[in-house]
Length: 259
Image (cartoon, rainbow, N blue to C red; front, top):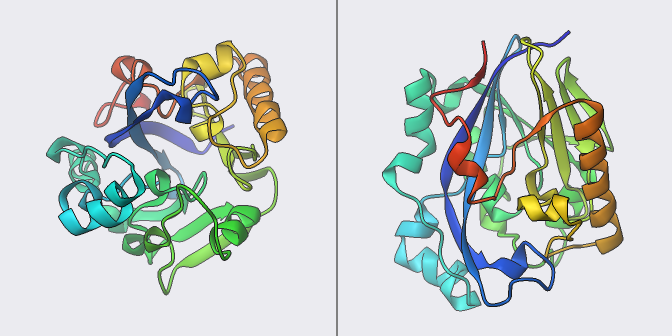
Protein backbone atom coordinates (compact mmCIF):
# COMPACT_ATOMS: atom_id res chain seq x y z
CA UNK A 1 0.00 0.00 0.00
CA UNK A 2 1.17 3.52 -0.75
CA UNK A 3 -0.16 7.03 -0.21
CA UNK A 4 2.09 8.48 -2.93
CA UNK A 5 0.45 9.04 -6.32
CA UNK A 6 3.13 10.78 -8.37
CA UNK A 7 6.79 11.80 -8.23
CA UNK A 8 8.10 14.90 -10.02
CA UNK A 9 11.77 15.75 -10.58
CA UNK A 10 12.45 19.50 -10.44
CA UNK A 11 15.73 20.56 -12.07
CA UNK A 12 16.68 23.74 -10.18
CA UNK A 13 20.02 24.65 -11.72
CA UNK A 14 23.64 23.53 -11.85
CA UNK A 15 26.73 23.84 -9.69
CA UNK A 16 30.19 23.95 -11.26
CA UNK A 17 32.82 22.05 -9.28
CA UNK A 18 35.91 19.90 -9.42
CA UNK A 19 35.10 16.24 -9.92
CA UNK A 20 36.98 15.36 -6.74
CA UNK A 21 34.13 16.94 -4.77
CA UNK A 22 32.05 13.98 -5.93
CA UNK A 23 34.68 11.24 -6.24
CA UNK A 24 37.30 11.09 -3.50
CA UNK A 25 40.82 11.63 -4.97
CA UNK A 26 39.63 10.82 -8.51
CA UNK A 27 39.29 13.27 -11.41
CA UNK A 28 41.38 16.18 -10.13
CA UNK A 29 41.80 17.62 -13.65
CA UNK A 30 38.09 17.62 -14.46
CA UNK A 31 35.37 20.18 -13.77
CA UNK A 32 31.70 19.15 -13.90
CA UNK A 33 28.43 21.03 -14.17
CA UNK A 34 26.30 18.95 -11.81
CA UNK A 35 22.50 19.27 -11.64
CA UNK A 36 20.74 20.47 -8.50
CA UNK A 37 17.33 18.87 -8.02
CA UNK A 38 14.32 18.73 -5.76
CA UNK A 39 11.61 16.07 -5.70
CA UNK A 40 7.89 16.76 -5.41
CA UNK A 41 5.43 14.09 -4.28
CA UNK A 42 1.68 14.20 -4.84
CA UNK A 43 0.25 12.25 -1.90
CA UNK A 44 -3.08 11.63 -0.22
CA UNK A 45 -1.74 13.80 2.64
CA UNK A 46 -0.94 16.75 0.37
CA UNK A 47 2.13 17.94 -1.49
CA UNK A 48 5.54 16.94 -0.09
CA UNK A 49 8.81 18.48 -1.26
CA UNK A 50 12.11 16.66 -0.78
CA UNK A 51 14.85 19.32 -0.69
CA UNK A 52 14.22 22.84 -1.94
CA UNK A 53 16.80 23.47 -4.65
CA UNK A 54 19.07 26.50 -4.82
CA UNK A 55 18.45 30.20 -4.36
CA UNK A 56 18.69 31.90 -7.79
CA UNK A 57 20.14 34.94 -6.01
CA UNK A 58 23.42 33.08 -5.59
CA UNK A 59 23.73 33.06 -9.38
CA UNK A 60 22.42 36.58 -10.01
CA UNK A 61 23.27 38.87 -7.09
CA UNK A 62 26.88 40.13 -7.37
CA UNK A 63 27.22 40.70 -3.62
CA UNK A 64 26.01 37.19 -2.75
CA UNK A 65 28.18 35.64 -5.47
CA UNK A 66 31.25 37.40 -4.07
CA UNK A 67 30.54 36.72 -0.40
CA UNK A 68 29.49 33.08 -0.58
CA UNK A 69 31.25 31.75 -3.67
CA UNK A 70 34.01 33.76 -5.32
CA UNK A 71 35.64 34.75 -2.01
CA UNK A 72 35.84 31.03 -1.10
CA UNK A 73 37.30 30.05 -4.46
CA UNK A 74 34.04 28.41 -5.55
CA UNK A 75 32.35 28.90 -8.91
CA UNK A 76 28.83 30.35 -8.52
CA UNK A 77 25.88 28.17 -9.52
CA UNK A 78 24.05 28.48 -12.82
CA UNK A 79 20.30 29.07 -12.56
CA UNK A 80 18.27 29.99 -15.63
CA UNK A 81 14.64 31.08 -15.81
CA UNK A 82 13.67 27.53 -16.75
CA UNK A 83 15.11 26.32 -13.43
CA UNK A 84 12.99 28.59 -11.21
CA UNK A 85 11.14 26.50 -8.64
CA UNK A 86 8.04 28.69 -8.76
CA UNK A 87 7.70 28.33 -12.52
CA UNK A 88 8.02 24.56 -12.39
CA UNK A 89 5.38 24.35 -9.67
CA UNK A 90 3.07 26.62 -11.67
CA UNK A 91 3.39 24.28 -14.66
CA UNK A 92 2.14 21.48 -12.40
CA UNK A 93 -0.69 23.67 -11.14
CA UNK A 94 0.44 24.53 -7.59
CA UNK A 95 2.55 27.13 -5.79
CA UNK A 96 4.85 27.19 -2.76
CA UNK A 97 1.96 27.70 -0.33
CA UNK A 98 0.41 24.39 -1.41
CA UNK A 99 3.38 22.44 -0.05
CA UNK A 100 2.69 21.51 3.56
CA UNK A 101 5.65 19.23 4.24
CA UNK A 102 9.32 19.67 3.31
CA UNK A 103 11.80 16.87 3.96
CA UNK A 104 15.50 17.73 3.81
CA UNK A 105 18.26 15.29 2.98
CA UNK A 106 20.79 17.59 4.69
CA UNK A 107 21.58 21.29 5.02
CA UNK A 108 24.22 21.92 2.39
CA UNK A 109 23.30 25.04 0.44
CA UNK A 110 22.33 23.21 -2.76
CA UNK A 111 19.66 21.22 -0.90
CA UNK A 112 17.97 23.71 1.43
CA UNK A 113 17.92 27.19 -0.06
CA UNK A 114 15.05 29.58 0.62
CA UNK A 115 13.60 27.70 3.57
CA UNK A 116 12.19 31.02 4.75
CA UNK A 117 9.63 30.59 1.96
CA UNK A 118 8.31 27.50 3.75
CA UNK A 119 7.52 28.95 7.17
CA UNK A 120 3.99 27.58 6.68
CA UNK A 121 5.24 24.00 6.27
CA UNK A 122 6.58 21.24 8.52
CA UNK A 123 10.34 20.81 7.93
CA UNK A 124 11.61 17.30 8.63
CA UNK A 125 15.24 16.31 8.94
CA UNK A 126 17.62 14.29 11.07
CA UNK A 127 18.32 15.69 14.52
CA UNK A 128 22.06 15.10 14.08
CA UNK A 129 22.07 17.23 10.93
CA UNK A 130 20.21 20.05 12.66
CA UNK A 131 22.59 20.00 15.63
CA UNK A 132 25.64 20.00 13.36
CA UNK A 133 24.40 22.75 11.03
CA UNK A 134 23.48 25.02 13.93
CA UNK A 135 26.81 24.40 15.68
CA UNK A 136 29.67 26.87 15.92
CA UNK A 137 31.48 25.84 12.71
CA UNK A 138 29.62 23.33 10.52
CA UNK A 139 32.17 23.72 7.71
CA UNK A 140 32.15 23.69 3.92
CA UNK A 141 28.78 23.65 2.19
CA UNK A 142 26.77 25.06 5.08
CA UNK A 143 25.51 28.62 4.57
CA UNK A 144 23.38 29.56 7.62
CA UNK A 145 21.70 32.27 5.53
CA UNK A 146 19.76 29.43 3.90
CA UNK A 147 18.35 27.70 6.96
CA UNK A 148 18.76 29.88 10.06
CA UNK A 149 15.50 31.80 9.79
CA UNK A 150 12.97 32.61 12.52
CA UNK A 151 9.59 30.91 12.67
CA UNK A 152 10.49 27.64 10.94
CA UNK A 153 8.60 24.55 12.16
CA UNK A 154 11.36 21.96 12.56
CA UNK A 155 10.42 18.30 12.90
CA UNK A 156 13.56 16.45 14.04
CA UNK A 157 13.95 12.71 13.51
CA UNK A 158 16.38 10.03 14.66
CA UNK A 159 17.33 7.22 12.27
CA UNK A 160 15.03 5.57 9.74
CA UNK A 161 11.42 6.76 9.80
CA UNK A 162 8.24 6.48 7.75
CA UNK A 163 6.65 9.74 6.66
CA UNK A 164 3.64 7.85 5.28
CA UNK A 165 2.98 4.55 3.53
CA UNK A 166 5.13 4.70 0.41
CA UNK A 167 7.68 7.20 1.76
CA UNK A 168 10.46 5.94 4.02
CA UNK A 169 13.44 8.05 5.02
CA UNK A 170 16.75 6.28 5.53
CA UNK A 171 19.61 7.15 7.84
CA UNK A 172 22.57 7.42 5.44
CA UNK A 173 24.94 9.60 7.43
CA UNK A 174 28.54 9.85 6.34
CA UNK A 175 28.54 12.58 3.72
CA UNK A 176 27.26 14.78 6.54
CA UNK A 177 26.49 13.82 10.17
CA UNK A 178 22.74 13.65 9.56
CA UNK A 179 22.30 12.89 5.88
CA UNK A 180 19.16 10.96 4.96
CA UNK A 181 17.93 9.34 1.75
CA UNK A 182 14.46 8.25 0.64
CA UNK A 183 12.70 5.13 -0.61
CA UNK A 184 9.53 6.02 -2.54
CA UNK A 185 6.87 3.52 -3.57
CA UNK A 186 4.11 4.86 -5.83
CA UNK A 187 0.51 3.64 -5.95
CA UNK A 188 1.42 2.27 -9.38
CA UNK A 189 3.90 -0.08 -7.72
CA UNK A 190 6.98 1.68 -9.10
CA UNK A 191 9.79 2.06 -6.55
CA UNK A 192 12.49 4.72 -6.50
CA UNK A 193 15.53 5.29 -4.33
CA UNK A 194 16.60 8.91 -3.87
CA UNK A 195 20.18 8.72 -2.57
CA UNK A 196 20.75 12.49 -2.59
CA UNK A 197 24.47 12.91 -1.78
CA UNK A 198 25.28 9.37 -0.68
CA UNK A 199 26.84 9.29 -4.14
CA UNK A 200 26.67 12.12 -6.66
CA UNK A 201 27.55 10.08 -9.73
CA UNK A 202 26.82 6.60 -11.06
CA UNK A 203 30.47 5.65 -10.54
CA UNK A 204 30.17 6.24 -6.80
CA UNK A 205 27.93 3.17 -6.76
CA UNK A 206 29.38 1.07 -9.57
CA UNK A 207 32.95 1.42 -8.27
CA UNK A 208 32.32 2.02 -4.54
CA UNK A 209 33.88 5.49 -4.51
CA UNK A 210 33.34 7.70 -1.47
CA UNK A 211 32.15 11.28 -1.89
CA UNK A 212 34.95 13.82 -1.89
CA UNK A 213 33.43 15.51 1.16
CA UNK A 214 32.66 13.22 4.12
CA UNK A 215 32.13 13.80 7.81
CA UNK A 216 32.78 10.06 8.33
CA UNK A 217 34.30 8.16 5.40
CA UNK A 218 33.57 4.68 6.81
CA UNK A 219 29.92 5.62 7.36
CA UNK A 220 29.78 7.16 3.87
CA UNK A 221 30.93 3.90 2.32
CA UNK A 222 28.45 1.95 4.45
CA UNK A 223 25.71 4.24 3.13
CA UNK A 224 26.73 3.50 -0.47
CA UNK A 225 26.56 -0.23 0.23
CA UNK A 226 23.19 0.14 1.94
CA UNK A 227 21.66 2.03 -0.99
CA UNK A 228 22.98 -0.55 -3.47
CA UNK A 229 21.51 -3.39 -1.42
CA UNK A 230 18.13 -1.69 -1.09
CA UNK A 231 18.01 -1.06 -4.82
CA UNK A 232 18.33 -4.80 -5.42
CA UNK A 233 16.01 -5.83 -2.59
CA UNK A 234 13.21 -3.51 -3.70
CA UNK A 235 13.90 -3.70 -7.46
CA UNK A 236 13.97 0.08 -7.37
CA UNK A 237 15.10 2.72 -9.83
CA UNK A 238 17.83 4.97 -8.45
CA UNK A 239 17.40 8.66 -9.24
CA UNK A 240 20.84 10.24 -9.00
CA UNK A 241 20.76 13.80 -7.71
CA UNK A 242 23.95 15.28 -9.16
CA UNK A 243 24.87 13.11 -12.16
CA UNK A 244 25.09 15.33 -15.31
CA UNK A 245 24.57 12.37 -17.65
CA UNK A 246 21.73 10.66 -15.79
CA UNK A 247 19.66 13.85 -15.52
CA UNK A 248 19.37 14.03 -19.31
CA UNK A 249 17.40 10.78 -19.54
CA UNK A 250 15.05 11.33 -16.58
CA UNK A 251 11.43 12.45 -16.81
CA UNK A 252 11.51 16.09 -15.66
CA UNK A 253 8.58 18.18 -14.40
CA UNK A 254 5.92 18.86 -15.48
CA UNK A 255 6.15 15.22 -16.62
CA UNK A 256 6.10 12.76 -13.74
CA UNK A 257 6.37 9.16 -12.60
CA UNK A 258 3.16 7.46 -11.51
CA UNK A 259 -0.50 7.91 -12.35
